[in-house]
Image (spheres, rainbow, N blue to C red):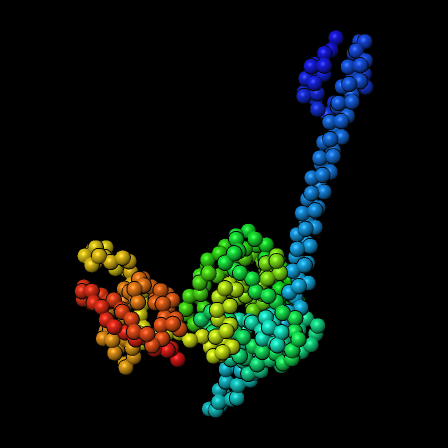
Length: 374
């Protein structure tokens, strides 16, 4: 005779068992086993259905988030057409007049009176510009200011009452966070791609040679023409400006963080450029020997070797010489040319400060007053 314990033991061994036979005169136990077995099967099928429903709900939530972002930000995205002069050609002993070429890129309106943010390389050397909005309107645009060192530029579109895209805080981004890129790649207007934040804190070399800090890496697909378009968080806020891809690579794209853009924009609108300091030297990053670091009690094992001093410049007046190695400026350790660039901000212009250099094995401290870079 089967006990209740043996029934549950059988179920643990055969969880999918359906019983339609009887064992001796234990009909009640067999009936119980049949009921328990059927319930287990129904529960498992229910779990399978709930898993599928949860997956579907997650996909629906992802789609809804991306759709919501597009509906909120896409009306502020514009397609920029830029006319640039081509290089003049020579023929039969005379110089021919250069022709003009048209390039394109993206941008987005951040102020309702027509201010548009884009990349500096999109509008570089532009002689004429037009902006096409999401409703198909085509307006004349003019350059307000550009900063090649951060690859950002502001243009203004004729008109008012434009839809705008709000800025978010890029410092709050986390790897793995969903982001959406909107732009006009290869001339296809209002194209949307989605991905995640792949990494934060990247550095990228601008066309001017300076290093751009805190760059966002994403796998949201970008193509030529996406440059200048917004990278948007799931909250519908612009957290970056799409700027570059790596040729031949897939899923490795970069955007200038909104934190950088929000610092640069007011200066471009006010001055047409970003003011930076300059001490009048050319140099290169060099490593110092371990012995030199120990003998001179240096805090860094590298510095900037001065290769040229501009005559009459701030460094020349201060007494810097070729072959000097700059170690500190204004109390900040200088271990590379990029460190020197970071220190020479607008705030440093016309403010006397101390520069520490290594000259012929001897530490020296000089006073220098950076000038404004022209």
